[in-house]
Amino acid sequence: MKIVNFTVKTLSTFFYLGYLPFIPGTFGSIAGVLIFFLINGSTPLYIILTSLLIISGFAVSSKAERIFNKKDAKYIVIDEVSGMLLALLFIPADLKVVIIGFFLFRILDTFKPYPAYIIQEFKGSLGVMGDDIAAGLYTNIILQVVVRLTSFKIS
Image 1 (cartoon, helix red, strand yellow):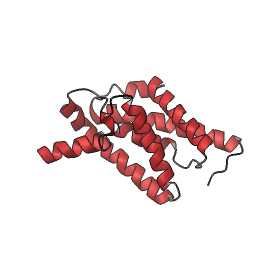
Image 2 (tube, one colour):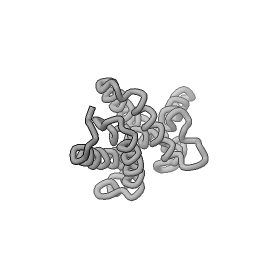
Image 3 (cartoon, one colour):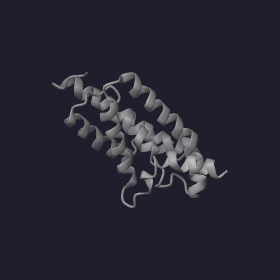
Image 4 (tube, one colour):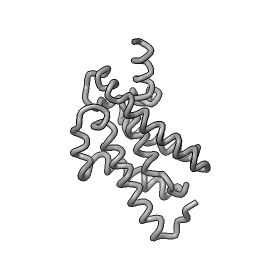
């Protein structure tokens, strides 16, 4: 049982990033941005890693809630990492676009426009991961429009 709890804590906190005492969700989003820049040159790798993080998030976040004895505990940041990666999927690695995407994702994740605020109320993994996936999708759609209507190049 100890190895399972260790694995759940390690993944759900994204390698203990969630234990940071100040704005762990924002640091989870920053981790997503860093991963974006590290693997952005390989679309297949980006898609695979993003998918694996989303799947892992769904697999561990419900157990993490039980371990931390709190719904969507602040320590769980795999949802922010996953949502941020989803927000930047197929977005050019232009620093201005990524910064806009980061702030847009954080705003949408905080204010949770429909249906994200409803999804957040679900129990278990769907409640933890769903609102961040929604925020990531919203952000990605907005960024896709911005990129296509401006001079940013899609690589």
